[in-house]
Image 1: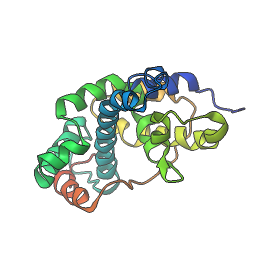
Image 2: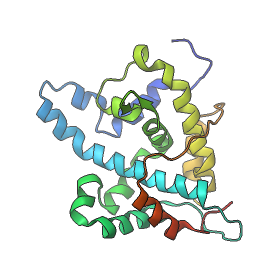
Image 3: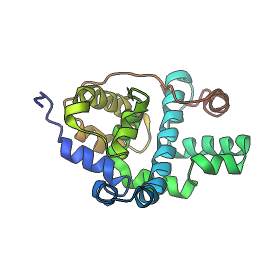
Length: 210
């Protein structure tokens, strides 16, 4: 597939798959049960990371107020998750999300690919997200190549729209380097449910830097 972008696709895809324990770790297994056991804990951690980024995205989009100096941060997102756990109860929360400690570990480990992971989760391919297709092992350039431009442009938007506002600039720097020369493409948050939005409004109101 020809492209004007110089982004190293093999590096990007490897980073995505490594977030789930490695592409070959589950693709080389003939057993669906074994594959599921390998993927499941990583999938839940990545889904929690996606949710945390969605909260920061929501806050940055809707709750801007220049008279406050607090920035989007992982700690702010984990506070949102804490409130969600109290709202829904521990059992329902644990079915979908990992602990704060695991989230912090995953956030640190995925680093440069966080914006790519979140952007992939926002792109619908039939009834799945591009991210789901990736960690199910069904991604191919031949079938899904048409989504790549949208994917990296949305990733650049996450980098510029959210990461650039964070006090810790390292995440923005490493993400920006990976996406050099890419023009951002804005998108809205669609995965949050109404109770999550209400909690977010309480926590983020007048606390996102303009």
